[in-house]
Image 1 (cartoon, rainbow, N blue to C red):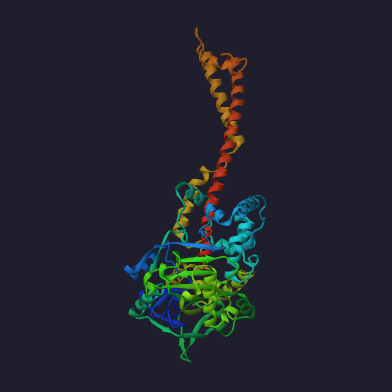
Image 2 (cartoon, rainbow, N blue to C red; image 1 turned 45 degrees about the vertical axis):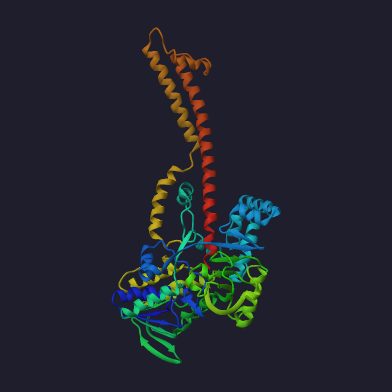
Length: 579
């Protein structure tokens, strides 16, 4: 059994396999486990590549994390803000804080822009720009979303698909919105107030996985690059890898791969059909690099990270590693910051020499007013290729072409973020690896069902049951039917009461019911009066019933709209915290 890649997905697959006694070999191109969620070190300073919070609603993944780390799994109070125009904005955006920081003019124009979007928004939501503008208004979109998003992806927002935003931002059902409004906002995976984090960074977790796999008889070969995947008649037969300049070949019974799927297509031997190769070339990735600055200052800002939205600097996000875990900084009177620059392999930033990157990062830190350039005493640079799969125009068709072809290879499974070109979080990536291992042992899980919208299957089942109860209660009331029912019931009640008194007879007939004479002109406690009362009561009952249903529907519509907007505003945090 061969697993390609020692990131969270690959290690989870290997761990599950060796648990079941399957002989497993893991091939990892780099010299460190963990993939993009590894921990790098420099002069005893540890730093996270991108910032990885540990939070999941999957009990199995959570239990696995805790078994691996025990007391080294810390609970960290979460704090992150947006830095824009020299001011810190609460995140997610809070109206009073945002408007106070933006000033009077923007405080007026942004709500007007929002109102316009609600009344005359984009009818079709095909792009990220349209998706966000419809929910927040064009002015707020241009202020807080456009610049940062284009920093991250390097392409205009009108070229990023709305489907990506929908995947990254938790979908909101009727039951979700109502239960959120009634009982408080549910803690979505990125709406948490605290998160778990390994004492020495996320790499500590994956090193424990490595140790557990090797102690159970599995093998990990670091610095081993897969160069060819030899296949025939719908099966991978051999894997060729290069290590220390030498190639070796090994037979394969089953293969699980977390390498970028476009790279995998290029390593197949013989080559796939030309349309599959073209589809792989059309898939694109965004890279980034992190310039670690060591500052001779004990404190800089209290956040774990801040988002830098201003277009005047290139940096997109700044990590403060001491605030993730104090043990990541060996000297308490110093601070290490990670200045993150999103880029493409081979572009100006990517090719810039390390010394120039230090100068750029130091000057931008100073221009933001967070610290002086003279406070920087050392630096270190890490470049991370293929960090984020890009959801650009046409990617869905290209990915489907690749999936259709790979589906013809029986003993190959692709897992993880890059292996599936899907923007899964760390726990979802692990889940794809674990399920792939179960498939090797005879299960038949569809790994493509593990994604942002469908990963938490238990919660979806609960949501379905809530929907079944809540939806009928909150269904729109039919005004005509309700008014007719109330009118009919009112008319019949008074009609029957009058007839009963007439039949009963006696010296005093219906003294209390005669009070209706003050409201129903011409009414008497007689058979004729009974029919007259039936007509009067029906009309009044119909009027009150119609007004009640109308007001009830109006109040409910306003309430549901408000509840859903509140939940949607908070769920937008998933978008930024994806990176």
